[in-house]
Length: 273
Image (cartoon, rainbow, N blue to C red; front, top):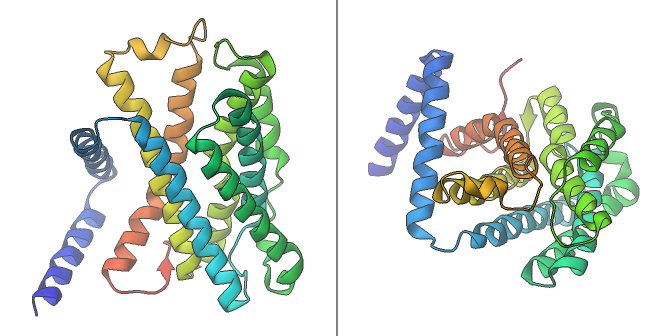
């Protein structure tokens, strides 16, 4: 009985939010985002842990996909383009990590890359008959070329080699938009099955944690953190924009995901454009 009342109250809250103007919705979203940042800062003292948590959540999302592919023998609804773009930025980041860090990030990136390559293999070969290729038609070069060009111009100015800095910038930019083919594919189908929804929601959580690290660092340094990396004055502001872009494009889906979970729906339904 208590659970039913709780669900009813949450449903009323979602209904109230839907009736509000776009300005009110944006205000509520920003307020919720800032409140979450404050809560995270109070609970976690070392903001570098946000990166580890972000990579761990991403890895958990991939595990959900592996479970789907192995149990259901079906890759319907999954974007091969997004998986291949993910493998590209993970491979580049792994090379950079070997050259620059050698820490827990290297291990997490390696595990996530291997898992992503396995997902790509399953979609391309084992489960090709269930792949919705006609819905997954966003060319990869639409994202690869702009990211590469931007990385040649804006990159961190550290003591590492020039190639390492450009590669690191490239993987940061590509990670920010790699999910676009998956979101475009879901917008075409309107109904997203649970495993794919769980995976995309995990990406949303991962990006929020990544954004939290940068925003809290900038706030606590009163803005000085933006210009700490040598002469790379545009690097951190661009990173913040890239993180913000991915968080923004995933936020809408995360809203409908949470609403579907609260309503006890197995499928996530997206509204028409």
